[in-house]
Image (cartoon, rainbow, N blue to C red; front, side, top):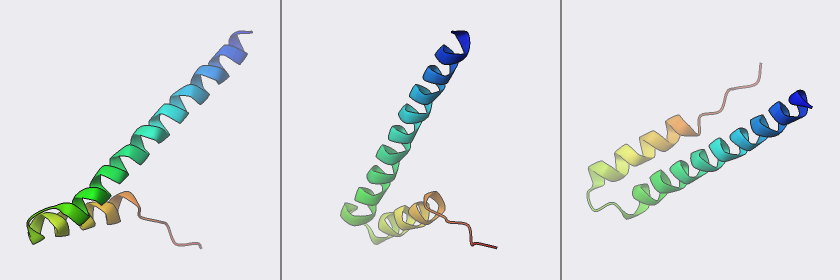
Length: 58
């Protein structure tokens, strides 16, 4: 039963961290659209590129 509890807790932690990551990406995406200065919008877009970087298939 200890193993099942660990699996459950791990799944809950992964789900929570995924939700936090998605909220962070959404916040940066909103900043890249609604920021007042063009420098802040550009910085937000660069941050999105880093957060959403995909690895090229080999």
